[in-house]
Every structure is written in C-alpha cells, then in structure tokens.
Length: 85
Image (tube, rainbow, N blue to C red; front, side, top):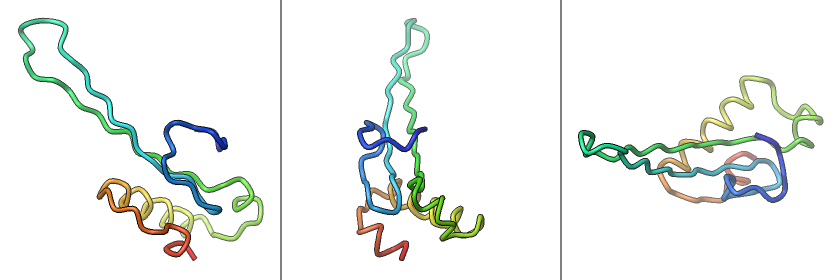
C-alpha cells in the first residue's frame, strides 16, 4: 500500500495515519457451493512525514497501527489523532 492522498481503501485519514477497510463478497461459480465467501481487508499506515521524523520507535508504531485497525474493525470512528497523541 502506498501513502497516497486519494486512495479508495483508506476511509479515515488524519495528519498521523491513514486507515480503512474494504469488504469483498465472492459468489460461488458452481451450484455445489451455495455459500458466499466474504473477505475483509483492513489496513493502516503511518504518513511518510511521521516515519521520516522518527517520532515512534518500532514497537510504538506497531501498537498505534494495531489499535487503529482494531478500532476500524469494531466500526467505531473516534478521532484517531487524539488516540495517537
């Protein structure tokens, strides 16, 4: 994933990070498989400026990104900037 200003995956953007999710539904091709398959892709990325400034250590960055993904999965959208800072 590339830190772009216009991306269709990242639905929530702050000055610190981008995060979002996208759901996919797969319909069976044959009559044998009657169940549809669902997939959810969740992604979070720190902005390039944040990485270049070395504001977070590796473990701290991992924690921030993991928390953002958990929040997105729970479908709660608080202000992630306040959560990070």
